[in-house]
Image 1 (spheres, rainbow, N blue to C red):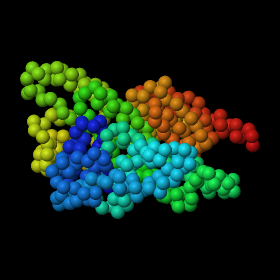
Image 2 (image 1 turned 60 degrees about the vertical axis):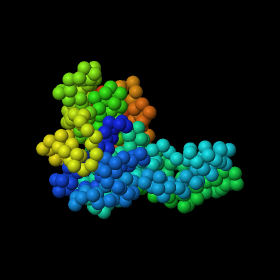
Image 3 (image 1 turned 90 degrees about the vertical axis):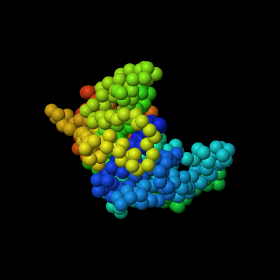
Image 4 (image 1 turned 30 degrees about the vertical axis):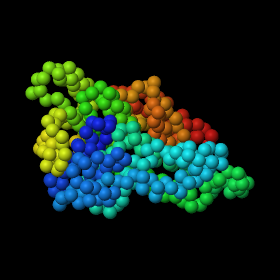
Length: 394
């Protein structure tokens, strides 16, 4: 199944582009489902068609869905949330504050995405087009599998591993029982399976939707960095709302000058990614007919389902006896990158985001001896110090 995920700053036209792409794919004969995971749904308004929390058939090859993220949250997180609230209240936290604190930011959008895994398992559709939440929420989703893994391994394992040690604490501190642990493990499995789907090479790609505006571009640059960090391949940048050359009204002259500069910045920032540019529409893009016409302006004669760019964001190489981990981190600065090795994992922190990368067996025992940027890549060089030390101990 081909998955295309659109993300971008709120207001750039992400939903319109998602709907247009889905309609074009369906027109070309692909059995397509377009999904909105944004809690502030506008997909039904864009298509001018009533939608539900389950897929609604719109045409022969197209269905659409606005996922009820609150319902998904309650079904998947309810039991864990109840335990977290009890734990916080036992520590003197106000009930209302405890309820809010027990929900990790981004969970609503995350559990909305979990349905994608079910569609992939059932192979119900050939193409899934995802109108995701705005950038900040989408980015939080990427680190959740690592966070959930930590919870399962460290917090919810207290009950299983602590046994007699933690039993006396039950009188004043609520600990997770087997049902909570089981639920947490189930959530982790679902999320981990989703992560595998979203990072599947040649099947899933992200497309960044931007406008030629400085703030939008800066946010897209950060998004591109973090998407590469979490191995979500980006295959195109779509530039929306360009003021056409034929607009000669003096009122727009400064806007046009600014857009010209920003279009150059977009080119310098994102090449060699394909950059698809299209003008600001002369009327509101509502309904299937106008969206299909718009899709032709976006893609021309290209098949929107095609993977437009295939360079992997992460890989391992060997050069002159050195093992090298190559992580594509465009726009990142070396001073903002931290590395930590913990067993067979390498943790990379870029700003406020971190990623845990499982090292291949051939690198277990090797220690990172140097890390440096070469073009857009952070190259981590591994030496033999750790392995040599182990050999000496033998």
